[in-house]
Length: 233
Image (cartoon, rainbow, N blue to C red):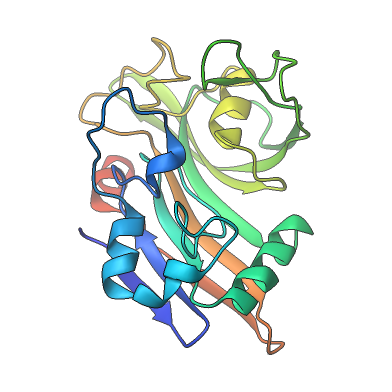
């Protein structure tokens, strides 16, 4: 697994997760007994102490937050229960600042804004929607346009995104709901993603920033992977 460790100490590690890698098997319901490699497999092999850390260590050891399978970027993982509880509290209180980069289809007229739309689960599926009432939860996403691009005669907008809540598929659902789906998003993009050469969704967790238990304000960054950066350079 091509997982880069950005930082580690006795309490937590910070990694750059590649696209195409599940964080944990419980992220989806399997119809067969077959499994695929996950970040948890790598953690248990390289940081075995995490096997007793978390709310549900049997499925998500050390995992405080997650990224979608096809989203790359920075993640923080707790190495002990005290740190897990501390980081979980920061996330619950919205004291963790996360910044993503996304390429969306279309030219966003409003250069910056806030999408404040509750998200629910569509009946009979795991797909999320701002129109569904099932398990509906508050969701807020802030964005700003970094630049506009024209690729293959199509208009695109490169966005910096700051989610204020952490709902499943939140950024993807919110951007699709205003008519600007993420390029390469097969679940929420419909037929509006004609960009050739993009085999994944253009969504990358660029940075994460928080105050650690010792009072330090720290920020970690993960470079945009080549399969995304070559498209916009």
